[in-house]
Image (cartoon, rainbow, N blue to C red; front, top):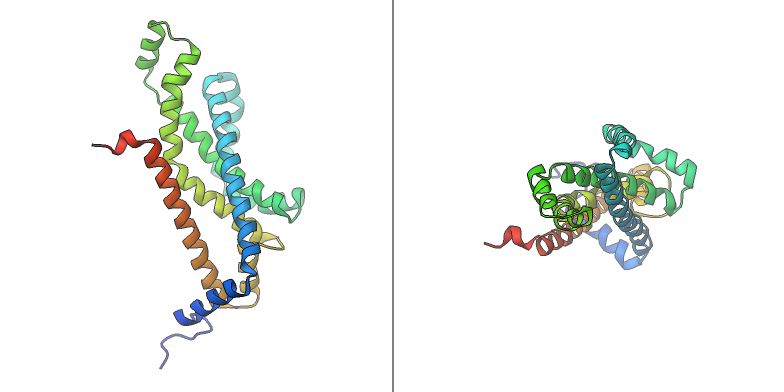
Length: 226
């Protein structure tokens, strides 16, 4: 006797069979490549742009008056709603998925850097200046160490955001990727494929989380050493 209708909630063996067939047939690799490319480029690009904009806004008050309201507005809205607009602008190929992943990461990292610099103790800044330290000394010895902790603290969240952007972008409009397969599974009412893809996405995100945590522990070893 079955407790649940397999149409709605398939047995674990059925999900495992779908997962096995995805890898044995080999088609999944093309979709994994598309999703991972969009997510990784979004993470790297988002980190670089977010750090640059965060530093610029924190150190140049006139620029902060322009950037901060824009970033607050982007942070206030669900940024995934920009996916259809990126598809219109950039098409259904990889570019629109990278753009969505990137914008999700940029806003997060911008505020991590911006708040990290603003949170630096002003007494420390004054002491460095009193000892003759200029802007480059402050940047190297005060701001960058402070910002590094903030950015690495948000790295795991950035990984999740980038993967979310890539998958949602593919779900909206794409010809390949894990989001595309999810959209196909939904349109064909294939619960086993849907669950298999969700498990696959969760597994890869957890692997990326573990890698991000290793990077954080390595670069912030002083926080964890007794």
